[in-house]
Length: 135
Image (cartoon, rainbow, N blue to C red; front, side, top):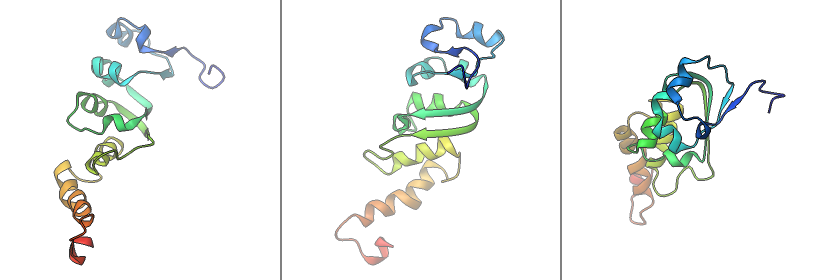
């Protein structure tokens, strides 16, 4: 890791005083944190402009009403990436949260996305749908 990132890697589970770290010289290039750590310390993570923010197992933020989503969405980064093998587990609306994290507003509001995309997709899956519903 030091070959590509020549500074200490911060692992928040080892840090007790997040606020102290913010006020110190925060020169670390990489910070690895669990979703729970981000949720519990959203002020710390939201206080810094990050270069990259990568969410592994990003389907964890699928519920836009969850505390984890609300914590992650506050983090500012120049570049964002989501990695998941299951972008949609149960409902097409879960996809909205991932896109709203990556590109806020790109798919409209949650309500707009539901009307424009989710409802028509659900209707088209019904065997009794008309060709108008299917299109």
